[in-house]
Image (cartoon, rainbow, N blue to C red; front, side):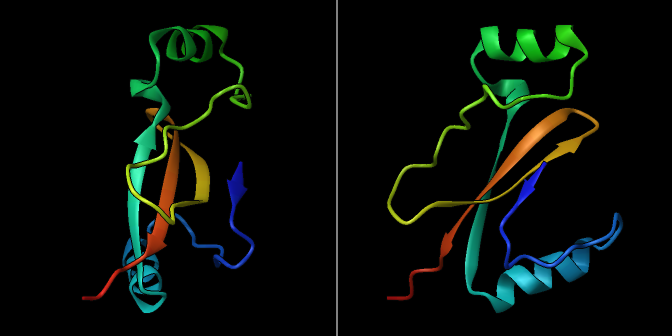
Length: 89
């Protein structure tokens, strides 16, 4: 669907490699699922049986500096990975 151009292509099952890359980049990631989006949007997606979710605007987490790292499909529908640099005091 979408992935930030600097993010490597990880294969299914590469969860540990992906987590390691995120840590190396100093990123904090929060996942937002279309499944829990506005009811009208979720219903539209799941009842249409169409993989297009371009009308979905994933809710950005509170705070500053968040950017979209990836939007990809899962068994439970599309998810958005929001990321930002870890803030060190």
